[in-house]
Length: 137
Image (cartoon, rainbow, N blue to C red; front, side):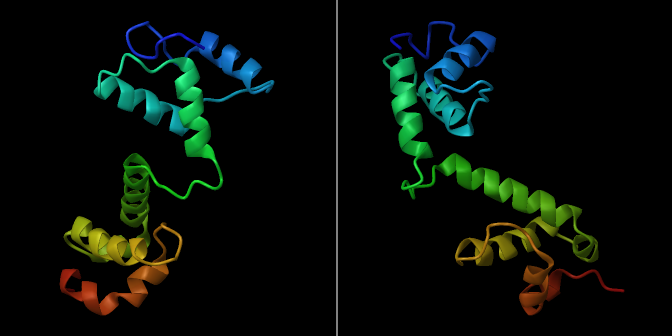
């Protein structure tokens, strides 16, 4: 629990998996995204005070179902998935400047209460706004 996350050689490997499996009393433990976010933040900030115990405490706060905060990295993941799904959709082939179209649709999606995932309905709902990017036939 007192092992430093930064500067000690700690990494998410088989030994760490075994430790976390015992800590969480799970037979098969998989590392969580929140853990990686916390570790990466400590590395970027050169935070040599963060211990495994601190990592666990922060993870449990982030992973709590009552925690409605979204870390910036999570928003980035949502955007990346949204763009990927839009670009792989059949609708995207009708647009030039696909990233601009995705950004317009994302802004509407992000500011709404709807799921933060691309759907064909977004393209239909905001057709007038993205019409300028349609490829002329």
